[in-house]
Length: 425
Image 1: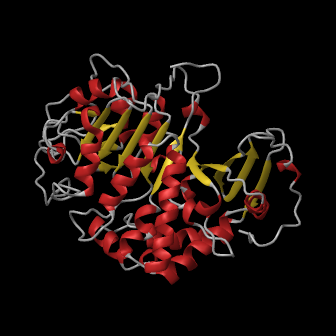
Image 2 (image 1 turned 45 degrees about the vertical axis):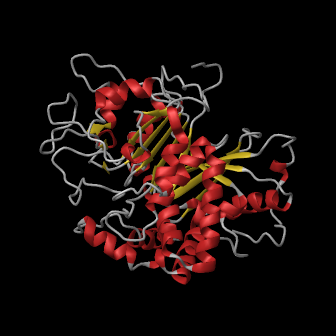
């Protein structure tokens, strides 16, 4: 990005018609051999911009990012991928800065960066809505730095722009937001047949009474579904099944999920892992004594004899490995898309696998859970999440503390899909 300390010589007249409205820019990446980038400011829909980035120029940086993340590379198992990432650039400040700088220099068009910087000079904070392509699906846009040391999160609020076919799906009705409404939660649920130390075991480990996680649950009070007499009882429940959860979500304002997500060869096969036995109805094949809940179950209904799409609340948080992996597929499907189509306006999810607190001492997952929950309690979840990421970035640069590494906070993004004009809940 160009520096905040100087104004660019490029034509910035597209910013002149802003008025009092907050500037919002939609940026879309398309893989078609080379990488194509289009963007338009919502106040000036008749002035779109487009540029082509040579694949030979952008791919090396994207390959370096892939090697830095805990997503398994071909031939790797998850444990090997995690070990590689923990020894990689995202846990070393200088190497992280070098990697994210390369990504910024290769992926952010100069003209767009100049427009964003001009707004920063004016003291205006825009909203950047990014629709990534499969090759850019795991780019942590918020972490990308400029040449004056600032990061994208210092300049703008960043959200994911779901494809138009998802945002404007026939019959989509955005659920109303009630800040005092119920919060349906599945917090590290027990998966039948998978003890704590297994592949689908605990992600948080034991939750102590005086912990930040327990305080988070206590603060939700009577809004929490299912209700619990003691805050720590909300974790590792064995009764959070699909039939119960479906009813709770239909009446909820929010859904907070912390647990496992597994991906598949197509987006509709991405799955949550609740306390569902293999006998539970659903579209996925059982995994031992357990049946996963897939994006297809949510989008089309899990009862094949009485298929009804799930009704989802206005705000959904999926704190799980690659829960936001929709963009890695050519077709716009996956858990985030299913949530949006089911009524969600904000869906926070993870771009890549998350190191778990149960499997890695001192990891930052618990802090991320609290931060995402707090963001979804805020008036603007996008701005609140980016504010947390901005704070983490500052602590990371000043202390080098692993829990503040972009490996944790850079994983999260929020898909924002308000109701189309003229529609109601």
